Image (cartoon, rainbow over all chains, first blue to last red; front, top):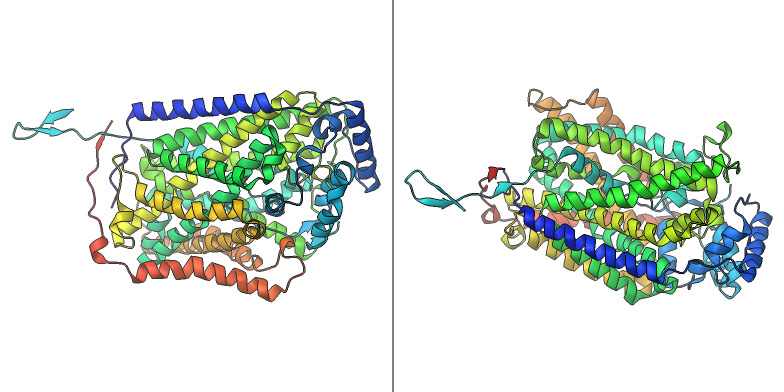
Length: 146
Length: 480
């Protein structure tokens, strides 16, 4: 029983690989051109120091310098504050409250409340307008405390 | 091109058979199972992440891989063939259906991850833009369908490349930078002492996490369907599965530890996930110019993984359908490259509808996590059947030639079956996402979904099958 052996000409594969590589290079150029790593400005470092203080107040042992934090979050909070209460952001977050699978075995679990500590602190410092709604959402989840 | 036949007349020369190497198959398998995506989430457990991956590896990865290696080295065709021969044809169809159905809801979440990874670099506001997400999912998915319809060798090349470029290299960079970070005299962000080897026991939650982590290794058997594409299937598949086992463990454990050394998950935004973890590690070294490059690499790895899932289960479904007439001839039609193109396109249409719902309808995207519970429950049915079939094959066909014989197969199958059953039962325990809802409602949703998708749909296919839909075996080409 068989479907007949597959036959794919070598030339076709070469063309396929070339197109994929070109597409990825073009995408890479676009990503590189649009990437703006946040600058560690004085304002960004002030906010970073505030975040570190908030995290340490919550019991975290922060090893990153304010300068490094500022380069990741800038003054706006970066990706974390890009509509954290939007449906797709929520969906992404819910999908990540999962086991350690990297493939289709991804499955929700009962998570430790510490998982939200960083995100809550970032939202509190960088986009406080979103905090109440986000906290309400986190509170609606069933978590364990370590 | 033509050759002279017996009567001196010219007949077309069959195109050469395309083989894939055992290393390529190992990389394909690794690409199907492992990625850097869960590293930040697992980093919160610090050193205990090792335990959380090793225990499941012993009770699930090892049995699955060794049993699949024995079965693939004896019977070509993947899980459908093993279960069909070991138990029965209908069960073989059920097994391959469960493997196939499980992927339908996987693509939107995987490609949603691709969309958010791209958004992290290009413009973070895009991450919550439904049109952007839908566009990325559609373009990537249908490109994948096109590539898969060209042949397994192309898929193997791209999946292997994606794994090396998008998982092994960034993973190695992460581990090296983490080691350098510690080498510079910085303290590890998460404690790395012997007392932290075991996760803190949180009762049921810990049990749910450990048992659900068995599923981290699901998919190890999936690429066995391509065993006939190996030059020496009896020997090469076992080598391939052992290499992928090692790679999967390394990919899961080391990057999670590296993140735990530099910046643990409880100091990151979970939504921004692995991209923010990389960004933070690079920021510690003032190397953030690498962030967009890593973003591109992660996208390449995700797309490579997607290709393997497109190419595998649908091929298994096709093989048994041609043998038993479970699917209409239209879905069994092969293109000139010998690929089940119509089946891929039909699957693509269904996936597209689900993906558009995920991207554009807030209620769907917010409840999407439930599908991953249902589909993993369905997938576990396949594992139960696979272990059962392996025992039956040893009993019924002990003399059947096998390139590899798993040691203590009955014991391995017992452990694997028990682990799969435990994961199936744990799947009915409401997770964090369900909040304080009624556990019985959750049970009904999961059980109903799993029964509908995993049993009712294949039963309907089975009931309406027609003998006239069986396809005659095709002649093989000539070896190149």
